[in-house]
Length: 631
Image (tube, rainbow, N blue to C red):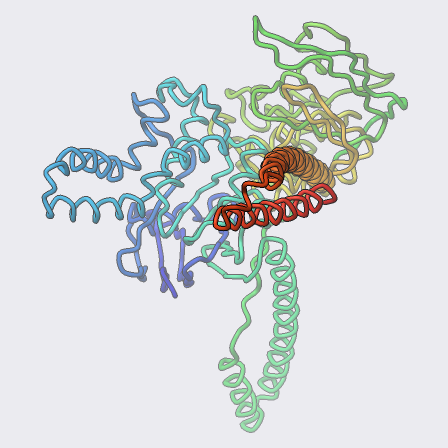
């Protein structure tokens, strides 16, 4: 069932056309990813859907009573509430029902039928609304998004911007709207939280529309991709990788058809010009006829292709085999221990990623390697001829007062203006853009300036701290190609799993328990973790099975001992009964030996009957005793 449909939607800001003739629909339960270059209008589309912006043309249709939840970029929650109190607000109707149920329970002592009926109806609604599970739901979402129980009572105003965004996301997920709009939801999430959110959204029963530059995230969640580019929208079935493959194929086919048509148009125009040059009535009519046919031709639009970003990295000189040796590194600030006893080595050509939760000290480790911080203990040793190029995720190395060309020229003073402008052009900074102040640039544009400076230095050891942050999808892919061809050594901190799969051949994982190294890229690392988890699960299962078998054996042993004791008790009772019967029989035999008994026939008959009965009981008892003893 279609829950949302856009028909010929347009949006302008002044004379600038942002979106034009947007047409698509989304079905119930669909997971739709929205991609496109920065500034293409992706967030604008969300704001049109939520009503924050109004359309300048076309219509947006919704299914009746559709509930929509929206998480904008860098969303935050401003509140004096604690995290727990803020999320409890989602369940205000449930809490009201719970309060009313307690009131009704006190009134039920009167046994009034109306109260009993109200209680029964309200109790059913309370259960259906998650009245007995809302606390576990809140805890599950908070833990999944990286909050520990010690933070639940922390006031929201004390949180960082990233933490406030995660609270906003948690609140939205708990609201469980039918249509979930997420604009860059993986911002401020570490890898564990990203993986949790992926699994959550894959199992989400509602419909999801999400804007993301995280290609791994889009691959794992989305069943369709809406591309917004050059003011237009095109819907593709499949995840991100399938979209890229289909888009490249369609673009190449369209370009081929466009070129063929242009060739045919030029051929027809040449014929028309030739006919007209004859300047005869017959040839002029032929030219006009061909011109009419040409005018009626349905023109194939040239496929939109953004300007190529030609990023390349090279080195001036090679290093020795050993590039970096880190030995027994520890770092703490006051009582806060970030990491300890961390040792690793990088050799020439290695491509190593450092992973770990936020706050574990990954960027701090990079600064220790750079010599900007001294470790609390341990040592760093660089190999021969090593020169380091550093990409700072905070972009603090940029002088905001400089123009773009000044910033790059200061890093490469021996180059001419033409060479500097050519280098910037390779990173899509062209024309008058080179005279913009750094302070006016977007995060992605600043990232390209940093990459330009990095490329011109030609260092043989690149240390990259979140290099794909702020970059659009196209620029990320071009950067990956450039780094894949880079002949030097790379040490990188990144949450971009798609990037890690393309570039990395070894991973160092930092945690509160220490660190571990794993060969291979991110996909290989995750595969190994899953294997380990499966083995651990199997071991636990075997332990449980062993414990169950032991318990069963113990139970059987107890049962055997109980039966043995019971048999022993039965035998003892039977032997006691045999003694009693034999004694009674002996007494009667004494009586039967008395002559006077035979003077009383009735008494004699009675004694004989009792004697026979006792003998019979004794035989039966012996038989039972024998049966139990042998058993």
